[in-house]
Image 1: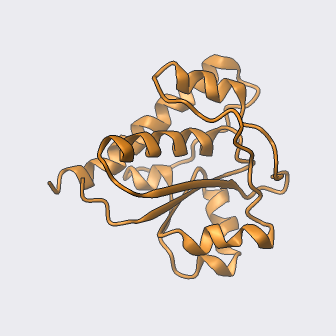
Image 2: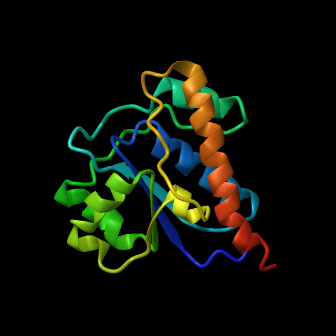
Amino acid sequence: MNFPYKSVLVVCSVNVARSCMVEGFLRDCFSKNKLKIDVKSGGIASNARDGCLISIDAQDVMKEIGIELSDTSESIDLKKKEHRKLIQDADLILALTEKHKEDLFKLEEVNNKPVLTLKEFAGERGDIEDPSMKGIEGFRLIRDEIKECLMKGLQKFLDKN
């Protein structure tokens, strides 16, 4: 795989479900392809907080497909000044919705970096919906949609080999 970025930041609302699943998929993919790419995630919504644990539903649906999400990871609020370095250090920022992307562009640290929604990364349009309050089946649907978008997006880099 010829992936041109050295670090990826994944951004959703509160950093306890969708962004964690994307981060898990990317880490797994990069690890399997023996790529040293830093992957981090954070939340950008008004209700984002530091220190929340990853959703158990997100952990469970990822475990079903062989990807372990840390049960000790804690959410990161990217609006806080002390976390803006994550934005500065990222070569590519993947947002789960257009709203997340708009919120990111309000931060000076974005500074002309490529910021794409996950759907745009896949060559599509639209948002990845929040699975919270949709039960385990809702999380499975979102997990599969995330995986499909990532596979489509990463395929263009796989094809270069």
